[in-house]
Each structure stands twice: as structure tokens, then as C-alpha cells.
Length: 296
Image 1 (cartoon, rainbow, N blue to C red):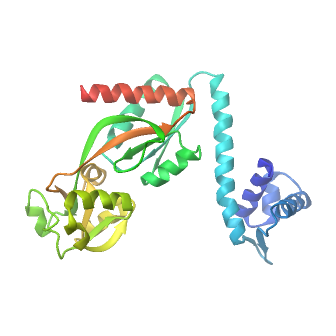
Image 2: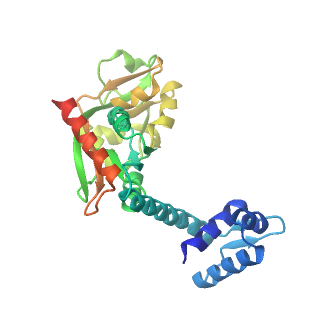
Image 3: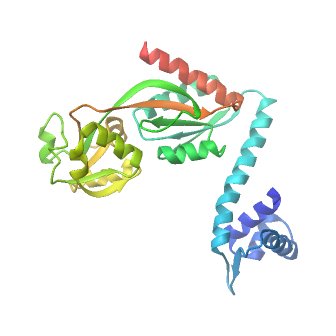
């Protein structure tokens, strides 16, 4: 498969019309039709359902679109990095970040870095650890900001020296808001929203004991932004880390830490055995200096 043909495919998938796609690509309709027919023949599958008014993707087409987007994004990124090596420090640094107290450090580092290198632009994606690692593995992200638990042994990493306390996000009017801290026994019988990832659930299970599995989980979440509405509406108590409360800044929410105390560390990670683009390497050094300063 040629990248050029994959770009043709993605354009048709977006436009849902041969005529509009051909116009967007500045090629003729017969040329586009022939190229895509050759692609279907090469793959041995039908990629499009050709209706009277529009063209839609088959299941195989949906799969190819996802992979084609990753492949073209990676190709563009590689071309950009090669070009940057022969130019002054400029380009794009892409970072995937889980929700944590380290988000503040990340933004401070970006601000400091861009004052030195104003031609470097940052792309910051929010996501759960598994998604961030998946995109690093695929070469679509340069760096990841991850919190425990999780296996990071296959990455180069730097410990940022930031620990987030684990606890419960709740409505300020909730009964447990009157307590200084929360135990698993306090939550017994109450509606609780917990993490979806099994690694995170096991972390809490290890820390809180058997009472964790007896809690009344009414929902699970990947990112706490949506789960926070359960707390805002006083509909449930939400497992989270203290740093996420800073994202909301609303007076009707409060955080109470667990007893026994549970903490999660934060790491900056990147792919092993792979040279970093110059802007990425320079930013890792900036994060290193900032972490040392904050922990001095």
C-alpha cells in the first residue's frame, strides 16, 4: 500500500463522494476510482458501500481508516523530524498525559521551554495510561506522563518526584465531606464510581483490603472528567487522586484522602532504544531540570 493511495482513501472516507474527494485531491474522478479499486483488489476486501447519494465504509473500511490515519500521521511526523534535524530547534513535541498533579509541572516546563525555543509547538493529549503507551509504541507520541500503577519497564523513564494522594471526590454537601479522611468501611453501602482499568482496581484492592470488592460500584470510568459529574450532582462518591481536583476548581466539590494513605508516583516516559528528535530531547532535559529544582 502506498501512502499516496491511503491518503486518497482517507479523503474519500471523509467526503463520502467520489466527485468531492477528487476535487479535494486535484485529480480526476476516473483516476481516483481506479486507484481505490486497485487498493480493494490488493487487499482482497471491499472497503466501500457505494450508494446512490453517498459512499460509506464497510467494516473492513473502518478498520483500514483507523490504521491509515495512524500510518499517515506517523509518516508526517517522521518527515517533520528529519527536516528538523537539519534546521534550528523548531518543530512539534507530542505528549500524552494522564490526569495528575504533574499536569501543572508539564505546563510550567512548556512555558519555560518556549521562552527559549519559541518555534517549538506542543501537542498535548489527555488519555488513560494504556492509550498513551499504545500511541508511544506506535510512534505517534514522543513522551508520556503516566502515574502508577502500570508497567513502564519497556520505556526509558524519569521519576518526577511527585506523589498524588488517592481518595474520594465528593460533593461538598455529602455526609462524608465532614470527615478528614475516608476508609473503605465508610463507603460501605454508598454508591461509588471506580476506575475501569484492572491494574488500578488491583492497586486499590491491595491498599484498602477485601472491603474494596464489597463496595457498591454503580459505574466505572477511564478519565475522571466525566465521573466528576457524579460528585457534582451528589449521585455517587468518585475514586480519584488529589491532583485532579485542581482541574475543576468548583466550590461544590471536595477531596478526602484514604486511610490507610495511598499514593501514586508520576513518571515521564519515552520509547527505549530510539533516538529522540532534537526538540524532544531538549524538552526532556527541561523537565529534568525542573523536577530537580522542585525536589531540591
